[in-house]
Image 1 (spheres, helix red, strand yellow):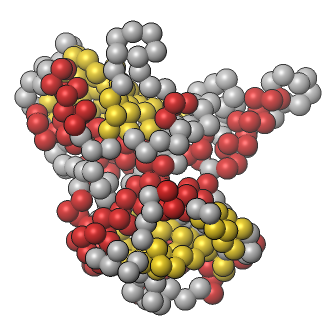
Image 2 (cartoon, one colour):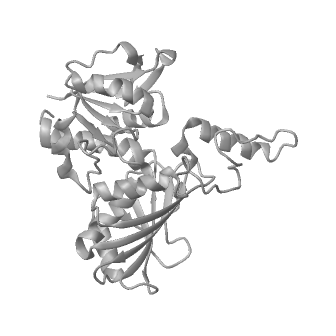
Image 3 (cartoon, helix red, strand yellow):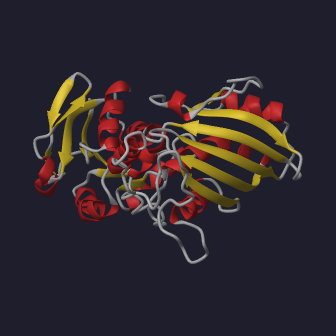
Length: 340
């Protein structure tokens, strides 16, 4: 016996990826519905070897459906997620709307799977920000061994994290650089993204940080440990898919780089590629389409007591969004609903 599953926002980048991953991982589905806004009504999307026609989110009745994976913005989620939850359908939400609500669990299955049992307070589970998800997968096994005091992270985030318009802008600007008179002015981004980097993701806050940076701080504390100090600088780079992070960690106890490497090799969801030679590390291009969070460049930081550096790369459309949502659905099914 399988589940009746809804994917909301099925025509977007993340929604399509959710459908792909549900099929790839052979999630036990008895029935699946692909929902979209009225303007996308009837658009065809793939689910394994099947083709689904999208149905109207506005008129859809969630009664009798087991879980709904939401891949729409916060405003649409605010309107439709409570409707699904009240109908008895568990919402797994990819937007930022519910992440910081104390009665909504924020889950990365490799890190805090026990939190899934808290879903019943609102019938909603939140999926973390893409940059946070891959980082906490890397941090958790190290934290369990040596207790993390402080994290300094600089991100190199691909444009797909900002949606299809951002991907198109990078593509069009890149082409326009080679054709005089066809330059493309920034619209989605605040400055040119082609052949450039932009140290600005989301809106600025009063303290000078951006909301993306604040998210990494707040979400790491909620998912892992409120005692961990986190400071982040989030940067958009001209890469289509794949987020990278340079992470500096200060521990309570000494952790040797060789032991850290071995701990990470054995940790769920992680692949260590760390050779001290040309090409002995993973870049964003190489992580695309993969489920894993890749760790490279593991080394001691001698400038602080008990310090370590590492390089972390992951497909942001997968682990940073769609894959984590599907893993939450698998966890919910396995630990709570127990149908499949």
